[in-house]
Length: 435
Image 1: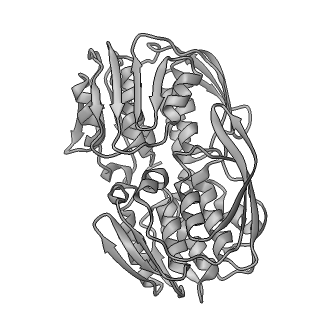
Image 2: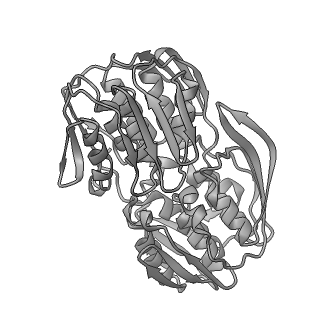
Image 3: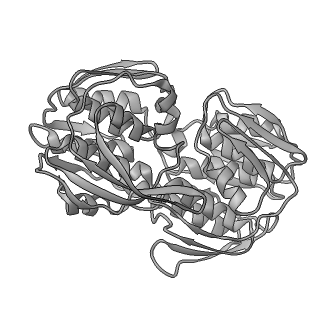
C-alpha cells in the first residue's frame, strides 16, 4: 500500500457536462460502519461500502485482528462481529495505508484492548500529526508512543481507561470519534465538547448499533460498559466525492448533472451552502433517510458564480471540500475570502499552500493567509500543477482543467484511488476530457 506508483493526469477544456453521476459510498460512514460492526455482537450487513484503498485498509486491519469479513459483491460486506473484547493481537504492524481517519479512529478503538499493537501508514500518512489524538487519549489512561508526534503509533495494551470531559482545542470529528471509541472501554462517562460542531457520524452510528449516547451539535457524551449489537448499514453516496461534480457543473456553461442518493448530513454540506451563496443553482430532490443519515438527489445546473466572504460558521462543515471551493472561487466574478480554515494545513498536504501554488501556476491571483486565502476570480490558464499526492487536490485541478484556456497537467494523482476509485471513468462518462 505504501508503494503506490506516481501517476499524472491531463485535464482539457470541455463542453457541457450531462447525465446521472453515481458517486461512491461515503468514506467516513464506511470506516465507522466497519469498525463498529467488527466489535458488535452478531453479524452486520453493510451495503454501499466504499471500495477505496483507505476503507479497505481499515477492513484489512480489522481482519488482521481476528474479524471475519466477507465481500459477496462490490460495495457489500458481511462482518461477523467479535464483541467489544473479542479482537485478537497481531504479530505484524497494522497498515492504515493513506487513511488518516482509519489511523486516528483505530487509535481510540485499540487504546482499550488487552494487547499491544502498532499502527503504520504510507509516506503521506507518516507525516500527519497524531498528538491531537494521542494526548487526550493519554488523559483517559491510554499509552501510545509516537515518533515525535507522528506515526507509527505504538498502542500499549492492558491499560485501564477512565472517562474524561474534554474540550477540543480545534474542532475535529476524527479526534472526537477516537475519544468516543475509547470511551466504550472506559469506566464512567466520556464527554467531548467542540468549539464548533463537526460531523456526527460516529454518534449516529453508535446509536444505530444500540449504544446509549447523548449528542447535540458540538457535544457528545456516553458511558462505558454497554454492548454493540449488529445491525444492517446502507452507506449513502459520499458528499465529498459529489463536491467535485457540483463545482464542475456550476462553472461549465450548459451543464446539468444529477447526483442520486447523496448523504446530506448537515455537518458535511457546508460546501452546498457556500456554493449557493456564490450563486450556484443546486436543488435537492427525493429527500429521505438511510441508516439515520439524511440523503437526497442533488441536481446542479451551470450558473454564474460571484466571490463571497465565506462565513466562518461553514468552515467545519466543509473542511474536506476546500480544494473544490478554491477552484469555484478562481472562476467566480470578484473576490472570495476564506478565514478560519487553519485545519487545512495538516491534511494529506498543506492544502492552502498546495492549492495556492497550483492556482498561481495557472495564472490565478491568490494570496495565502495563515488560516485561509484571498482569491480573485478570473480566467484559469493551462499549465502544470503538483497535487503532492493529495487526492482531493488532484480531483479539484481536474475540475479546473474543464474551464481552463488550455490543458492542465496534474502531477502525482495515484492517491485518488484512496477515496474515489473509478473517478476517471465516472468523470469521462459525464463529459470531462480527462486522461
